[in-house]
Each structure stands twice: as structure tokens, then as C-alpha cells.
Length: 272
Image 1 (tube, rainbow, N blue to C red):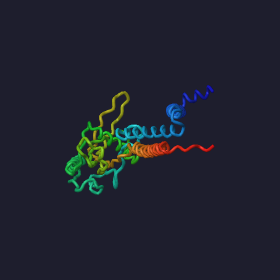
Image 2 (cartoon, one colour):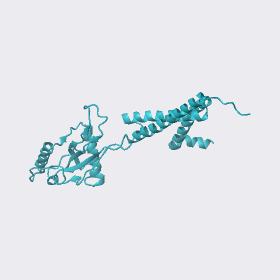
Image 3 (spheres, rainbow, N blue to C red):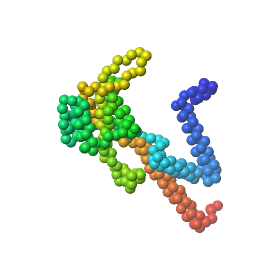
Image 4 (cartoon, rainbow, N blue to C red):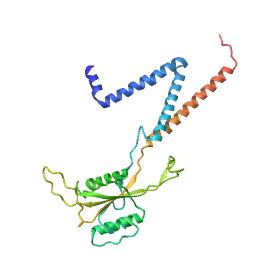
């Protein structure tokens, strides 16, 4: 017995299951015990179950509105098609990032400036360094460059700029009320990265600040935003619980009507 108690105390999974079972038995079972002793076992069961699913419908609606509670997949960036990592500025048109190619030469720095000008001219918005969306895009591009494509190692490059385009939602009543904006355009991000000059690490000294290698061309990581399904579980709970709640309310109403008919009918003497 003592070993079983220790298992419940130290195993998070087992302890969570036991706590949920005890809570259900005490809260729902205790409520059913009180209601059932007053109105009967069958009617008490219908009342308690209807109240439970009504509460679940209300809780699901709150989760759905505020994006809390049981959540689905969070939004994330994933590689865009047809080309994710553009290693040459002349390929930006073929990757469907630019409509017209910028004027390019032999200087990588001048080429990067021409590409930046053309991107902003075609509607790409340059994100500020303090913008949290910039940090999310940079983190996603780091995962693509280091883990998936093995393009760079940690510390061998730096993110120079992040561009954003698309993602408009509709219908909107105004800018602050967009609860019913279920439709949206695809949203893209373009992270510009530049290789850095290899620095020699010396023991006991702080690492040197990264210096961009002006002899190498800049790379561009093209990504598409996946909005995820953060509120999907709450939406399913709301609709499912609401359907069961309405069905149970209909059963209670039907029983009440049948009871009224029986009470208003003529009382016949029972046979001996």
C-alpha cells in the first residue's frame, strides 16, 4: 500500500489520472447524488448530464474566444515553394519572389542593395529589428539553414533583414474587430542572410563581433506562414457539447410535456 502511494505521489502521469478521476467522482457524482435523491435516479441523471454539457459548451466558447484551454497546433513558418533558399539574387524572379529582376553586377554588396530596393518597391515590407514577428521569422530560417538544408553552421552567418508580405484577413468591421475574419491571403516572409568572415577564437577573450563577408553573395530564405489550428479543439468542444446539451434539453422538455398530459388526464380506479 505504501509503495502504491509513493507511485501516485511521484509519477506525474499516474497522479494526474487519479486526480481527474477523483474530481469527476466527487464533483459530478456528488451533484448527481444530491439531485437524484430529490427527483429520482433517471431524471436526476438527465439534469446533471445536461448541466455538465451546458457548462462544457460555455467553457469551450470561452476557450475559443480567448485562445486558451485545450489548444491545437500553433502558427509556424515552413519552407515555401518552389525554392526555399535562394543562393543567387538573379534567381529571385524564378522563385516567384520578384516580378522583375533588379540590376545586378559583380559587387555582392551593391546587388544586395538593389534587391532590397526592388523588394520594397514590389510590396515587401521591411520589418523593424524590434518587431517580434522579425524574431520569429529569423528563428524559423535558422532551423531551415542549420538543421534541414545544412547550409550554414552556428555563427557562420547573420540575418541582415526580414521582409514580410501578404496575410490580409477579411471580412473586418474595423481594424480592432476581426473576430469573423475567417478568410485570409497567404503570408510570406523573406529572410536575408549574409555569410560572415571567420573569426579566430582566443581562450580568455570575448568573441569578436561578426563581420559580413563582402566577397560572398547574400542568401534569401523564402517561407510561408501556416496559421495552425490553435482554436480548433475549442471549436469542436463548443459545437459538440452544444449539440448534446440541446438534445438533452429537448428530452427534458418532452418528459415535462408527457408529465403534464398524465397529470391532467382522468384518474381511473385501479382494478382489484
